[in-house]
Image (cartoon, helix red, strand yellow):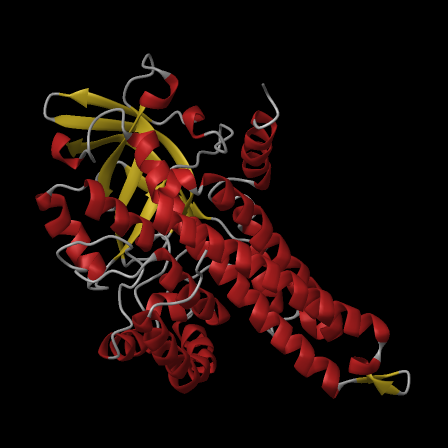
Amino acid sequence: MNLEQTPRGKELEATLLEFMDSHVYPAEAVYEEQMAALGDPHGHPQIVEDLKAEARSRGLWNLFLPHRTEWTPEPLSNLDYAYLAEITGRSIALAPEAMNCAAPDTGNMEVLSLFGTPEQQEQWLLPLLNGEIRSAFAMTEPDVASSDATNIQLSIVRDGDDYVLNGRKWWTSGAASDRCKIMIVMGKTDPDAPRHLQQSMVLVPMDTPGVTKVRDLPVFGYQDREGHAEIDFDDVRVPVSSLLSQEGSGFAIAQARLGPGRIHHCMRCIGVAERALDLMCRRVTERIAFGRPLAEQGVIREWIADSRIEIEQARLLTLKAAYLMDTVGTKGAAIEISAIKVVAPNVALKVVDRAIQAHGGAGVSDDFPLAAMYAGLRTLRFADGPDEVHRRQVARTELARHVD
């Protein structure tokens, strides 16, 4: 198993590291100032557009698509992109969007590139690839256990040349922003079909009559800039040309969408963990307790050692999953993808928690990014499938090896 980057991957990594040092990290304070001046937690500060222009000029743009398209003729492998995703995780609020590689747009662009019609691609995919608009993915619902996607209840009913949508979604990430112009919505077109063929996906513009943003959901009290909206669909009509692929393909599209996205999430988690470990090491060398620097306390050294060991383990497992996706496909890498989705957020949470403890009261304040990191990482333990679902999949496969 070769986990080495290609020459192009190494070149892009060097370019990205320089971009992070020269532009992204210095922009973090500017970003906070501009957001405060806007007075809108879902506002769009100028510094983001400045970073996007700089990233694009350096060739750090739309690097997430792992398959060849007319817009990305030289795609990166999942393995090459995994190394870059980790680096972007070190400045999670800025770097992914600066490179037009932020969720949920990445997954939505991948869906549109794989399943969209030429007309859908021209109307929605091209503006997304150009970073002109944002998008949302509406699947989770408040009234059912959405960890089982077959539970979703939003109805999509054919009525002449239209589909009519009725139901409610929540945790629709990205939908709180005024820059969000389009949603991919998953619902049921045929409740009587086999369990995994009942669902379909349709494109719904945000300004469609009957679409109502009920509220923006905070995460541990934090309002993410693109938001996580609860949305009501009341007799929402869209033309039948809004259907992605064909009726009954919604579940399969969702699975295709989540594979690469889980790699991206996990590598960004590792990047967050690396940033937290760096903050912890800096802090413990600057603070003295009981007559000596915190860095000389045995328990602190244990935290640092365990953090390094766990980060390295999580990184290797995630890179293995990316390698398998490139070589044997998403199905062949299914167990590793499930495993990393459990491991990476949990490891990152442990590292951030230790860093918070090392910072004392400052760790739970907004003076450092640690509390916000913790909130975001904790969410990932059920986003794109909760830990329990992924553990269930791993255990099922392991047990099958022992059945005659």
